[in-house]
Image 1 (tube, one colour):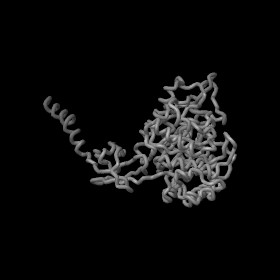
Image 2 (cartoon, helix red, strand yellow; image 1 turned 45 degrees about the vertical axis):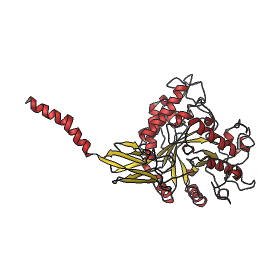
Image 3 (tube, helix red, strand yellow; image 1 turned 180 degrees about the vertical axis):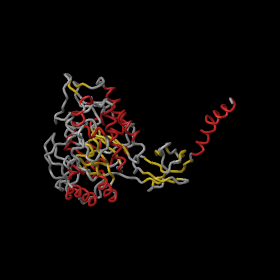
Image 4 (cartoon, one colour; image 1 turned 60 degrees about the vertical axis):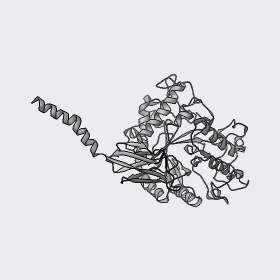
Length: 449
């Protein structure tokens, strides 16, 4: 009887695992650039039970019984493809040129149609869509229990999000879902144990009278990541995290000591966890960061350290608004007079600090009235100078920020198409039509507090 038990034990310990492993199929093949036919290295390939990267010859191999494989690489559209044998993949290069659809503008079908029309008429190809606002509202129907508990579902401006996404996909538009993370009034006010407090224990509010959630708290991390996973499941091409930082204020109380090392670890920890949990979807990740971070080795008291951030997301999106550089950049103290130089030098400096290819950066550009220098409206002169600088740097496209999503067709149509200016043509002629209608709404990414 004992020998029978030993045989049975050996079967389960040795033979069964070997049999199970034999059931996994080898998935192998190559990855190429669809336009140049160049073999691509370090492309991420993932199934539900295995992952790898293509080697220096563009080849890869997985062991999996999955029917589909997710393929991602910066500079290309992410995709999910059925498994065949062998699998010869061709990735489509893609450079986003994006407009921004704000949380409240999304509630207007007229505004949505206007932006879709602008994209069609101007050769732009991407749209950044607010999914979670700085007040903590979630624009679409969420199944995350905490969202309902804190009142984040009381105002939904994208009730028809699946249908809207389908329209954009049909139009060929690259969709970027923007999620404001730690600036979150709904979560902070309704779950005060997850909020940032003053030293005397009161709920802290910034200059906009908005409270923040604690960037150290893992429950805050998971709440935002679960919302991001819902958006990825709906079919967004990219999830963009904004306000992934600490308030720039030292006399506040958090769940951990507010040291530079702790702040940096928290921000990178959140982004790394998000990227890991989003890996099961054909979606890229990006993070909005302050423009001055491109020039600094330190975290500027907000937890954003450029070199460390680079390992945590697919794309970094510095907010290179000339108005956001009140002290200018080296050799150019008046930023709004030198829009091209601000963008060009900042992107160059960011690449130097990180050692990353320019394709890992996609900047936000200013399409709103100056608030720091001479209060000028940003016309095509300043807008196209920024675009040209971004294109010349080799960045992964660009995004135009206007808080109210107010853009005009007249300003977007130019004699020289967007993105096709030469370096020497950095500043289109004065008098070119404005790219946006003026708005009194403040840019919510500035000031720091």
